[in-house]
View (cartoon, rainbow, N blue to C red):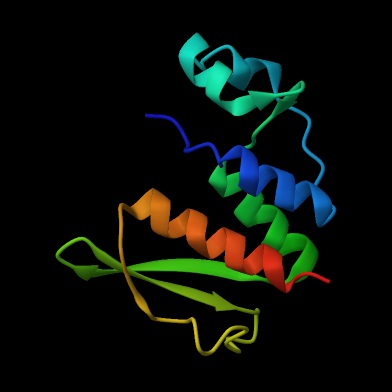
Length: 115
């Protein structure tokens, strides 16, 4: 089992918001060639969802949480450390996706909050 890589579009947005990522060579060895082709663009390797989540938390006090509501429905919460909803109209809206897709949507919405 490996961590989910973010899409190139999400990585590009993160880069514009100040996220800098240097691939770990040990981790790169475990990515198969087909996945590498899908996630490398102009020499930029996309990081994992969990690494981007950690950067949002440590550098911007933005917490992205995914809750399973049942029947393949997830809700996304975007809060700060105090528990304040940063996007109240978006939080807890049901999203019918896979967990990783819902998480990616939450990461994108969190990145959009950064000035």
